[in-house]
Each structure stands twice: as C-alpha cells, then as structure tokens.
Image 1: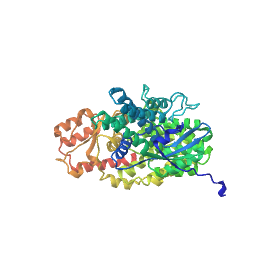
Image 2: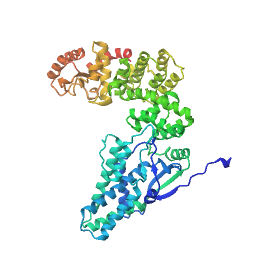
Image 3: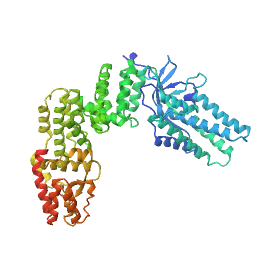
Image 4: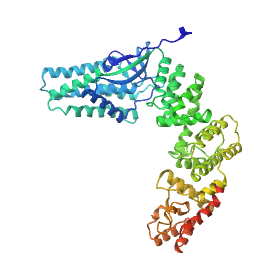
Length: 575
C-alpha cells in the first residue's frame, strides 16, 4: 500500500534571479488572466522599500506551484502567475530606467556606464525571448482553439520595450499597463531623492540587487498535472486570496485533463457572460449548486462541490449545465442590462417579476429559477411561481421584517425538489411555498397597522416603498405602475404631511407616503397650498383624494392611521 504513494515534490527556495535564470515558464490556457490592481502593486513597492530601509533583510514573495512538462521543457504555472508576471514587469521597469539614464547622461564615467550596462545585461538574460530564445515567462498560451493571444503580445511588448499599441479593452492588459506605470513612477520618485546622477545610479543598482537577491519564492515543481492541481487546491482551498470560482475552475480542469482546450473554452463562455467577475461566477455556481445538490456558504462551496465532482463525466456535465444556465443567471442579476436580457423571456411578466425582485435586492430565490430552467418549465408557470415568491418575501421580510435565514434554505430545498421532480406542477410548488413560508393574514395585518418605511431617493429602500404603494394604487384604481414607476422612473417618494402636522413617529408610516410625478418637485417643506396644488395636478386618483384632506386641514395622525387601515384591506389580496 505504501509503495503506491506518489513521490512528494520537494519545495525549493529561489531568489528572483535564480527563478528566471534558466527556466521557461508558461501560464496554461485555463488560468485566469493577470488581475493585480494598484493596491497589490503598492504593497509590492512597500515591501521593496522595507528592504532599502534595512527594516528587513529578505522578503518572502509567496509560493509558486508548477507542472514540470519535460516534453516541452516548460514549467506550467498552476499557482503564482500574478507574482511572476509582476516580477517581469518590474524587471522591465528597472531595465528601461537604466537605458534611459544611459541614453540621457552622456558625460557619465566609464564605471557608471558599466553599472547601467550591467543592469541591462542581467535583466535581459532573465527576461529572454529574443534572438530565437523562448520567453522566460509566457502569460497566455496558444492552442488550437485560441490561436491569437493579445495578452501575451502586449506582455511581450512591455517586457521587451517594444511598441504597446494594442487596444486596451481587456482588463488584464489595463492591469499590466497600470503595474508598469505605477512601478516606473515609484522608482523614478525614489531616484529623485538623490541629487547627483552617480548617486541615482548607485541607488538603482541597490534596488536591482534588493529585488533579485533578497526577494525569494518557494516553488513546488510537480511531476504531473494532477499532482500540481492537488497541491494548488491544498494551498488555496482555505485561503482568502482566491475566490471559490477560481479554485473550482482549477478542480474542473484537473478532472478534464484529457481535453483542457475544450474545458477552457467552455469555462470562457461562462466567464465572458459574467464579465470575468470571480464574485459573480462564484455566486452563480453557488446558486446552481443549491438548485441541484445543497445550499452551502461560499467558504464551503469548493469543498462541497469537489466531493461530488470526482469524474470527468461529472465535471463535463457540470460545465454543460453552467453554460445552459449562465444567460438566465445574468438576467436574474441584470434583467434590464441590454436588449438580450430584456427579451430573454418571451413572457414579459417573468421579466417584470425578476426586475422587481432585483430592485428589492432579493436573490435568495435564484436556485428556484435555475431548477425551473433545468427542468424546462414553461414561462407561464414560472411567472406564477415568481409571483408567489414575491408574496412570500413581501409578507416575510418587507411587512413583518423577519430575517431571511429561513427563506434561503427553504427556497434551496424547494429548488432541489423541483430538480428531482418531487414537485412537478405549478400548483405543487406554490402550495409548498404557501404552506412552508407564507406568513398568515393575521400576522401581516398586525404588522401593517404600524408599518413604517424610511424611503429613499435610490436603491432598495426606494424601490421597496415604490413597489408597495404602486401595487396598492393599481389595485384601487386604473394605475398601471410598472412601466411608468419602474422602467421610466417618473415618480418620486414624498411625505404627505410634515412635522408641523403629524408627530415625528408618524412621519414614515406607510399612510404618510405617496408617489408623485417628479416634474412637480413636491416637497414636504412646501406650503400647504403648494402641496395641495401639486397633488391635485397629479394624474394619480389617490393623490387627488389626499389633496382633499389637506384642503380641509384634516391631515393628521388619525388620518394616517385611517389610510393605513384602509390599505390593509388590499394587502391580503395583493400578497
């Protein structure tokens, strides 16, 4: 049994100069692109400053995990490409500054010129990639499915000082450009602290030496891709540097090593649709997993998933499902983002309901919609189920103000029962939602009688109150609220009475709120006469009725309570 164990690769300590001296690194096609932002670049520079200030002797730059591909004489970077890419960019900055100093200072001594030439010579050997030599680091690998590599072309231009004229549309390209610019400005600012050129050259030499000889990494070079994937997962599954989606992608690739190009192509479809945003991809995978298997936290997502996905067939089915669902998930998060999202559902009621839930910042129900899509449920049924979801949320959270701890697992459980076909018809599903989650009429009526809302000019608070009032107004008149109040955003929330007419604790009661056309510029600080005129001009029947109370000087605490009780007659029908 013990003889079957694989040989564990021994970690090796490398200074930056040793790391790039004679190794050819390549970032495999399935790895995420360069993503360091200015904060991480600033952190690197601060670490470098500590070395120059002699507050520390050496700096550990982090771990690197590679697969040693002996057939291609390459080290495939499984973990650590962000640090390695930044290292090469920093080397290019140091080389370019040394070249500039050599070119601009024609009266240098031979020793100073030799020092600058030495910097150029050393860094050129570490970067390589000229005169037929392979690059010491290739950040974007070519494949049959990905023959053009603009990121690698741009990176090559940066580290070799060539023209960088590619359109900077890619986030990774912008990040590389930012890293180069920030590091170059940092070095130039440091050198300006010295008055004389010879002092600046000495400081530059010290900086180069500090980075090459006192920054170090620990590298684990695994003999197989499988070993490298396992080491990567072990190092990162409990860490905070990577999102769950990044670890999950690595796991899927390890399961699909027989066709990494296709696996990467499939993942790219998902990534492109969700804007390459690791947080969005993680949320998507979590919602999908909750719709089929189990609801877990983001921190536990990889662990739960990796236990189930342990075959190539399972991994491929997982990717196939994600590709099938990624468009609808984008609609769930951004229902009105573009024409495709607006028109994704032929039944406009589905889009309206998703938009309302999105404005109320409700995402707990996403697994239900994903399960319905996986089971190819028709849109009429989907609209009916979403209406019930809204009813549950409005009663549970908006009116009674209970927490959502119960809703999320319950929605996930219902989604899984839909997927397993334990719940098949819309009646089955809505009956379960009603029985398990819908608050009773007596509960919501008791809460409604004293319900207050803060309102707001934007965001969840605004849309919650606009939705409550609009639904009620539509129920008691012919006001069709969705297009005008939501899509066109024609109305604003206003208090009817001010603090001179009602008590402070009554100002935010539902009964003291209304919506009115934005063009009227209604304000509670307006005189009563001005408010009456604006309410009378409103095309909403409700506002004309309210103006009558103000005209008779009858808008007070009792009027608010009366109005709130009148609206209570509608809420059990609406929700």
